[in-house]
Amino acid sequence: MSAHAVAQPMTASKSGPLKGTASVPGDKSISHRALIFGAMAVGETKITGLLEGQDVLDTAKAMRAFGATVLQHGPGAWSVHGVGVGGFQEPSDVIDCGNSGTGVRLIMGTMATTPMTATFTGDASLRKRPMGRVTDPLSLFGTQAYGRKGGRLPMTVVGAAHPVPVRYALPVASAQVKSAVLLAGLNAPGQTVVIEREPTRDHSERMLLGFGAQLTVEKTNEGNVITLTGQPELRPQTVAVPRDPSSAAFPVCAALLVEGSDIFVPGVSQNLTRNGLYLTLVEMGAQIEFQNPRTEGGEPVADLRVRFSDNMKGIEVPPERAPSMIDEYPILSVVAACSAGKTIMRGVKELRVKESDRIDAMARGLEACGVTIEEDEDTLIVHGMGAGGVPGGATCATHIDHRIAMSFLVLGMAAKNPVSVDDASPIVTSFPIFEGLMTGLGATLRQGGQQD
Ligand code: S3P
Image (tube, rainbow, N blue to C red; front, side):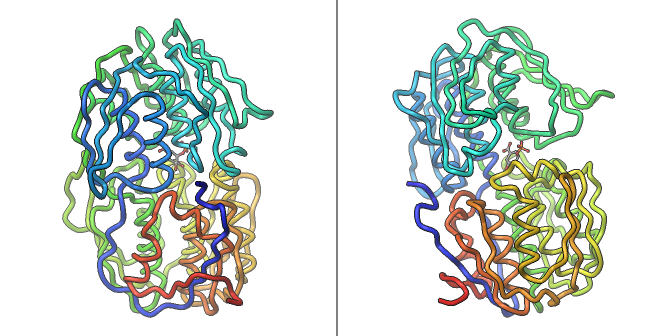
């Protein structure tokens, strides 16, 4: 069932101090990859801490459709009995990836160099998103793809029977595209090379090495040159999925904005390809202590102590930081609205092709809440109103986008008047325990809209 068959309005109101521990669920990017790499290994991969959000459940279902045995043993505890590189079977039905761009793009890459045909679809949000960015490089392997106008889903992909290795320089900073090409390269002979000018999240590289692939990353003037040797036998792994820094962003930012808050957020990734929001918040004057740095599930993490920060200031976010915080601009724009002065976010046009057009969704919702915005194709500027200064009192459209929904609900916890979202149901895609976790900290959240 779709996450949003029936719209579920939700309302957040000015909240008392947030206190306690915010233990957020597993990382979405690593959860998808644990299932997919597990399916390509020979034997049983064991996973703990898997995010049981709808996006990841859809990927689990897809891996079963391609022939892997995927079982749940307990909360977050899963196993994948993989079929080996090139061992996928042709699915007998359409693969529905729901809301997940990561799911569909990585899976297209995974089957692209095995001779079989698969048809992919998704929900109304995913069917609007461009797939050409993945099928263009896959065509270099010999893969064919037939989609709707503009490279949209539903799309049928015909895997290459005699794939050739490719050398591909990414035209956009995208970990999904990078990963799709690497996954396709696994079943091609010889060496596949991906060049990324700006570093994007590196979970695929780290995990492929863990699963026994031969992969090197060289830092050159052109950027990172990633070289993968094709047709390895991947070895099954035990994967402990670390917590998701993109989910942690919501309680962290809520605590910064809600008066009197003081919370503890364990195990937040300090991976340089994921921590851009946290650097930005500190530059804005956030009171965040990074405690007990260590490695968890192969990722550098720290525990965060986060306190209400009433004199945060707007900044210009360095555009080269965008890939390391690409999913965090919606919640950053809420923090910006509650800070003093302007926050300038440039080089963010990728936000226009996420689960929604996130520049437009945030601009319209913030304006409805009384905040002044400037935008162009590649820029969002928020004129901050200071701590507790945002009027609120509006209903914001979420456009089937979990991060838009959670961002406006956080705004409602700090604004003068309640803020509603028209549909909170997409939150299950990435953070199914959001409502319980936030109310447990002391947030005032309720089902229903402004009038209910
Ligand atoms: C992801 C990569 C990013 C990010 C998405 C997850 C991944 O997308 O927005 O939520 O797991 O590889 P792009 O690669 O399109 O930037």
